[in-house]
Length: 160
Ligand SMILES: [Fe+2]
Image (cartoon, rainbow, N blue to C red; front, top):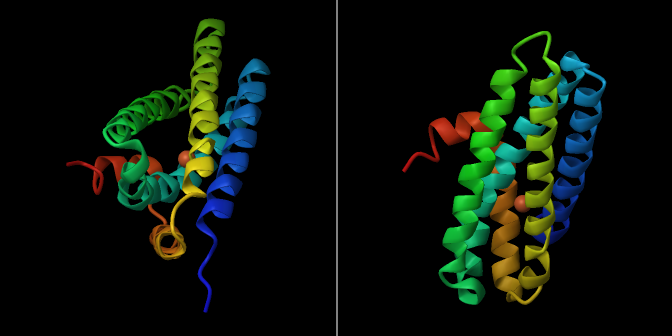
């Protein structure tokens, strides 16, 4: 029985995250805090299993191609988690000042860059062996089943 196709699902997540971030940016520009908060909550749920899959399965596998550059990817995740945490904190407020809304939109744009960088890993992943890709599919599926949101995962399981 075939497991899910890791690369296809990986890229599908990136599209959803891209769209979510663009929605957050529009919501912030319209000063619609409840909308921005709602989308951020959805992204938190989506990105948790995605990051977990990347850090626990994809990145270690890509070390054959990337070597120590994988450590840079992990550092990039540190930055994303910090930004997401700051955004979540800011969006706890019901009303944002112009400066706060602008700052949050800027942070969301910084996350867009990460999405675009991360999607580039798909082109490297295509060079993995079939057995490795199959294993990645299994690992992606189990990260999704565990379904731990990003900020919860970062505060608990990820801490090392
Ligand atoms: Fe990614």
